[in-house]
Length: 336
Image (tube, rainbow, N blue to C red; front, side, top):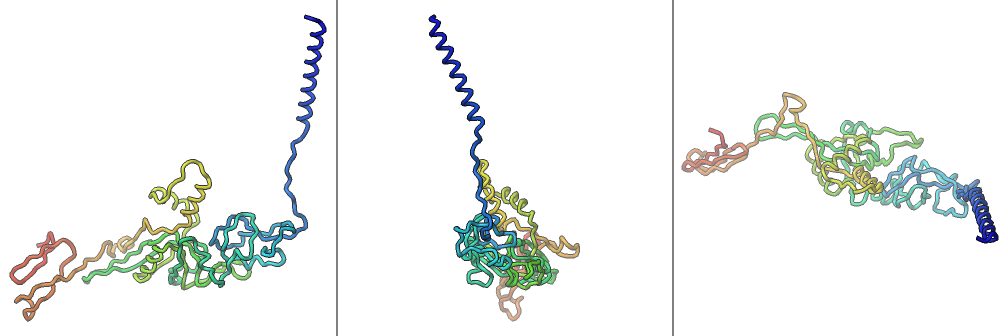
């Protein structure tokens, strides 16, 4: 091979190697540009939501905070520090859904006493129902707006005989949200401290069917409140999944799982009720329904006074009617 061509080839390879090394050093030494958030210094501070606030949320002291905001983006509907009193907003209800970090506007909240306040506190498809309670049945005033309770019905069931009545209590509804106690929608006083007060009426959030059941239950016996623990949501979810009341989303969709958890945590239920009778409390009380009697018409006969038709009482249950002339006798199955 020609010596000149070999020299040119070696020189080209050397130049290419040097160029590659220089390019590598240049790109590795250059730092990638980093985005820096603009910091607002000395600007006004506006009230923003600290977490997502859906419609019907009762505002608490940790639901909002002041945050610096660009002066050019300030709107007249914002709550500005120094002009707004955050303490006065505790107990208000969200009328327009807000996301975390979104400024709270004056038209997005409804204050107690304003028109439509209770309607704004209700979830979609829910109803408000009032229940009369006493100091004992109202957990001595330790139930506050926003808590969740179970509703217990206590009653006596009497038969037509002279025996002892059946005393019983049953949990008829679970996981009801408390909207108000008397006319209070928050649990704090003017200084922001939790204040315990007894009340005679409690307003609950329920579905239309459960509202009807509560209305009937108030005429049957004494209703009592049973305060639920915050940790009950997990157990309620397990029970709902086992009963087939909720559908577990397929895959690993975290948003769908959060929606399912929120649905179970905020939904009242009237299924899977439990009950206790007097026999479960005391051995001297009844455990089952008392015997009852029904009136059976008897045709006129010589046995009836003045020969007129009368009635005969027989226990409820399977029975055989025996007719002997004008006399009718009802004999229970198994009787003599």
